[in-house]
Length: 235
Image (cartoon, rainbow, N blue to C red; front, top):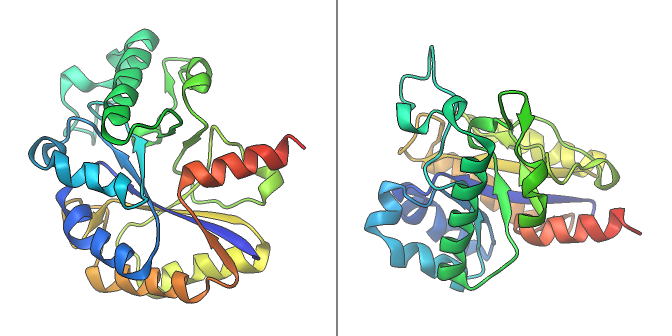
């Protein structure tokens, strides 16, 4: 294979279950769903989320309550979940509770993490350092891709879909093939559900294109990819 692609979805919203999963399953693709454990969709459709693991998709940790730094332009952040008001210990406790919740869903003990809003620090302190034993890898949000020996497993870069067209996303896939890189794609809304959206048609087209390139691309969930990269880097 010339490159690797990981398909990820953030925040545990209904549109993932309704619009993304049927396409993934029809193509035989396995993705990583970074679940916010107390999302409205999780509360209403717990069994549907549980079924994803049985289908071979990864349930990743995206915290209990999706804390982010509040302030100007972030009016949607509730005061009680303002990351700037958290302590490192609170972040650790909530993240470990999310791991326990996910273990109850899929029975697994190895897990990957996705930073909420791409934020990796509380004050001046990086909270991933004390969490490294809890996770095989952690995904960030910068639009970059790297070769296998250059991947930082606790700061895995990704390309975030924000109303991109199929043609724009296809350029990412083609670049990954040309540069022998790891491409991680991050979806939020799929046909709605989040302002960081992709149309149902463009989402289907890019997944179909990735599937068509299977001879060139290794497609796997983040946990599988991270364990392979870790073994490669430790040789």
